[in-house]
Length: 340
Image 1 (cartoon, rainbow, N blue to C red):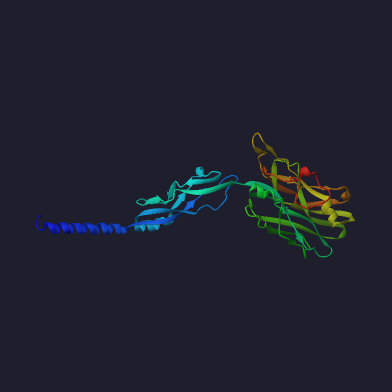
Image 2 (tube, helix red, strand yellow):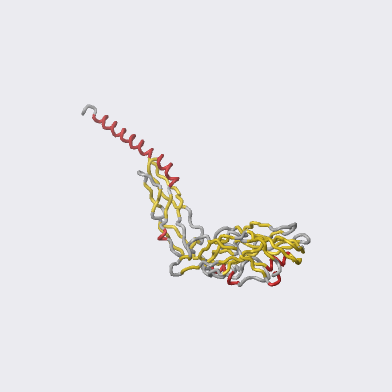
């Protein structure tokens, strides 16, 4: 043990140096930017500006482990720390860190700006281009939905009273048609809640005078007696009728002088906070109401004879006009309070 002990001691020291150097070559220390996982905001709150997407962290561990797992790491913000206004929100956790890896946050907070957004219900308006061919005319149009809910800063929403759809051409149109149109881009900072698609049903009729049995389509269905706290969804928006007349009647007279009506008699019970009765959908029979100028015609058939009605609680939003049915129809109609 003591023979050439100096050489043995030097050899042990050299071996230890090589061992430490080998182990250190497997350890990696590097700085990476990990993405920040921001919580979803509820109600009318939103991020007013694009918050920072990443924060820098120092990662230390075995080289292969660090290189593999660092791509899955993310910084998490506690929803309780997100408040209205501009705040420095702390980064409390780094997810995706495996055992044996040390992570040091080089930045412990990020600035977050939260603003309150308003809601506004505005009507949708459609614009037509051109005219149908001779001996045809556009009589009515029905939009679904008829109104849209906008979200944005209150001062921006005040400037918007309606949403106008792109023009729809009537050239060469000789019969009723439906077209799906997207709501155009709105001013910066204003967005649409829900789908941006609007279905426009346009009723094109011939300018003809006939006697005997005829058919008329595109008669809008309206609700009678709807609770003002409720909204409805109808399985059908229009009906067609087959009728008989001894006298010549202009097609337009039928569609402006006849109303298709269904009873919407469900109510909202504020005490129980629910719709009564609970059974949905309601199956209702369509009733045809004629004005005095059309008393001489006989309605032979209604298609469909019955429709389904689904009720939902109306959103309490401002600037909505409950009397606007969006059809653009003129002429006799039920009491405005009966419209949905």
